[in-house]
Image (cartoon, rainbow, N blue to C red):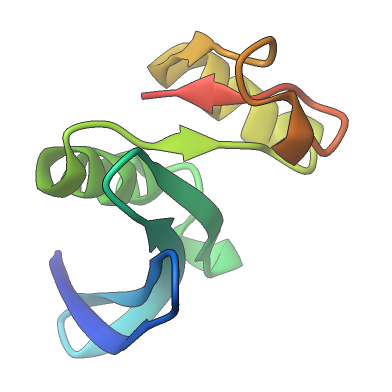
Length: 107
């Protein structure tokens, strides 16, 4: 799987980066992060439905962790919550302000 930056811009307090995951020339997903000197927040990750459940999302997340050292994610559904629970640790008490009802996890 190839992961590449497709958009990047700097704001006053953070940098926004959009990534694309590609397999055999086919885009299978995207991820958006907001990052600064303090932390990196995985705002969204989407894997096309036909590629879900095959480890691509986990590989994508692991790539981001390798790049940033750690990431924080706030899942917005039960499936995402199970994924982030498996990969990380609950930090809802520290980053409660980004909680979307399914906890906050650091990976």
